[in-house]
Amino acid sequence: MIDRIINEVKDAIVAAVEGTDNIITALRNAVKNQTTGVVKDVGDIGTAIEDAISGVAEGAVKGASTIVASTTEAVKNIVHSAVEGASEAGMDILTAVRNVARGAVSGTAKVGGDLALASVAAVEGAVEAAGKFGADASESVKSAVIGVIHAADDIGSEAGVAVRKALMNAASLPRDVVEKAIGGSAKK
Image (cartoon, rainbow, N blue to C red; front, side, top):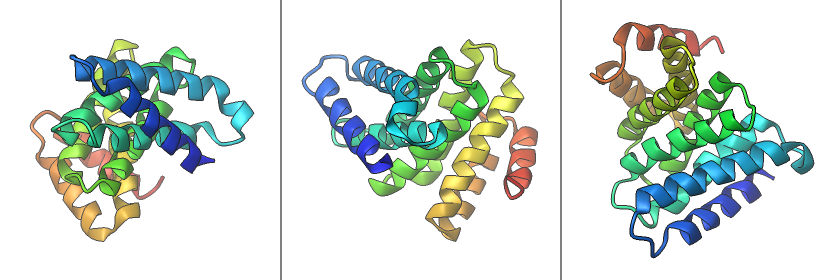
């Protein structure tokens, strides 16, 4: 079922974005709509909501990678929009942050993108979106970091090391919170 979500979202993203003048706006709107739809329909499709929204993010990255010049910029916008859509559909914001970030990194790996840059972009996009809904910034960073670390570790040990290093060195992220999340990610 997750593969079906990924492929349907990928196709929807391509259809929505191809030929538009404002690619980023079209991408954001399409991702938000796809996320909202999946969250509302998750009971009907028989899969866990966490896996479903992770699949939306993964499919969106796959679709966007065929159209946009920068997968990293697309990841940030995809994660931001998917978190917004999930929150507006009533999903717990921190659960959305963790799983959308995880899906975006998985999608990036599958299209051959830079996992380190995508991971930082995913955390940034998730935190920006979560902040719009009043979520605690530190908790949002922690949830997003845990999501990207789990995705990276699933890809392989080299990916896990590269992503951890990138997150620790990102000037845009609070180092103390990232350190705690990386330390705690092994426990989750």
